Image (cartoon, rainbow, N blue to C red; front, side, top):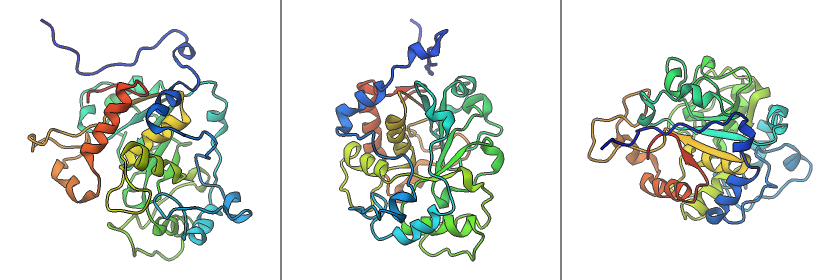
Amino acid sequence: MTSSPRFLLPIREEQPDKACVQGEAGRKAAEIIGNYSQDEPVFLRLKDYFWSKKPSMYQLPYGTKGSENLLLQALALINSALPESLQSLKCHRCVVVGSGNRLIDSHLGDAIDEYDVVLRLNNAPVYGYERDVGSKTTMRLFYPESAFFHPRENNADTLLVLVPFKAADFQWVTITLADKKRVYRGFWKRPPIIWKSNPEYVRILNPFFMSMTATRLLGLPNKPSQKKPTTGLVAITLALHLCDMVHIAGFGYPDTSNKNQSIHYYEKVMLKAMRPSGHNISQEALAIKRLLDIKAIKNLTYF
């Protein structure tokens, strides 16, 4: 009896567009997410706040209520458009690359680089790990405390997408890009003092995606609380909105009985480090499992 393979590689056809069906991922995800509006902008836009003063019902991280003034300052420095290279695609084949230990010795690097859109998380490196995680990065989702990544970890045109959790995150973007006096109040860990990034490639994620992740996938209330979705699950929600095909790799945590296995592929951090994080990893695992069961997403590693 032969054992099943540990890693599932994506099936590639001679003409990749045949494997990609427009709107397929979103239609399947609608079984769980429900009214998942394609009209919502992916990134926050200056025109929605400067000219029309777009009202928001919720405070961060689920809306911008009460943080508009700080947000305006940040949006004045950056872009909000989806690059033409992505807009022009007939069908978006996307992979969300997690930071999990499951990527070690996966040899998925070449397969990951074949996708149209590669989303990465926080400070997860690619340099030195290309064999397993690839080298292409279309978008990197992060928050100030996780912005400790070297420029070499991204491509020249990588979009650096801020996932805002609090008003101080908007302020951080403004003061670092404009090189103003640093302010570190309101952060659970000091963010980078120097953050060399081209404002042209910085974006702010619409809190709509955080809200959908929390309420539709995790069943959390649409108001600030101690429990919040991880950047990884938010990235999956974003991909289901933006992409026609959504695959994931490197998601999942070690079994609780395995106290010596790191949760990341690139550093020794044990599962106990997640306890004070405010994330419910068991609940998130169930959410991902539901998306896998209805085939809204496909897993390239194991879960």
